[in-house]
Length: 365
Image 1: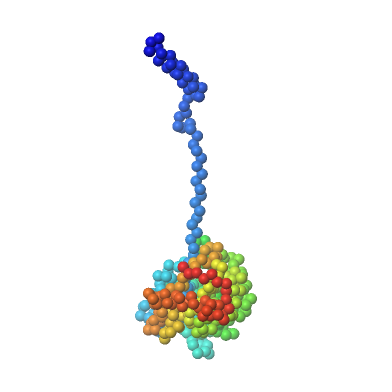
Image 2 (image 1 turned 90 degrees about the vertical axis):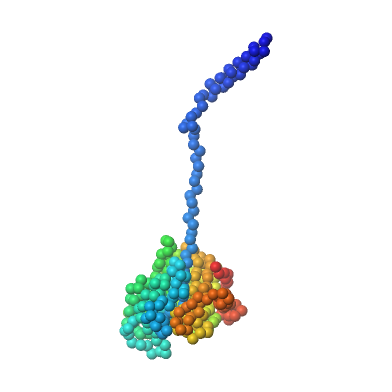
């Protein structure tokens, strides 16, 4: 057999095998007939953005602040960027905003022009606590004027009202769908006749302990986050009182997430405890000052998540300019020094061992 025939013998069987195989399997499917793989695209999880709250201390419009306002200068210019960057910024207003009323019988009386409120608003302030011992310096008529002026300025007030129910009612502010309730408590107030009743305008009254607990618990039912701004403590004392630490613990238990204190006119310590935060005093803010501890001020920001957990806080130290009454941010070594001083005043710590204490996980951001 020739070589050609040998090759044909081998090739022909292979041809038939191939043909049979193709016939058994059927025609090759076109791409459009090929089943598509089912690819499950995961639903993207929303990025939960924390909420930033900013706080300043005591504000009034007495001299030399009044002169700055008349000159068209905003006393909050140095800290404006911090306040406006926050989701909500709040301060404690220690003055009547009115030309009317009867002066109270007391040593210090504060009355200010409405331009103070306009400057607070333009600097980024959203909320004002009036639950303190100067809101009623010129009686209920001037106090009603103050509340109306705050509303007209585009801000909201806590800590006082035209009657007791309105004084204790929280202000609810919604940030990206999260409701935040603010309550003002005048633990230090102007006396019996400055406290709101069912028929009289005035401030809240912190010494009726059940009222504060009830207000906090009710606010927690309608808001994920509850912030309490309180006027308490001892003037010029660098350490919180035991009463203040006990109140803070009770209010946290009732549902508060953040507590911001005022009245001492100097800095006191702050504590972040189990996702709850308290600053016992932010001191003065826009205020006359002759220097010393009463001129040490600053802006404090608190980082909180929609579920109410505080994860950090930051204190931006400032000093009040004795010529203008304005807070001026510190820099360099002074900045670090005043931050460390603030941290050293933590209740129950080395500097303030007799203040009582709150379980501490103190972290700043």
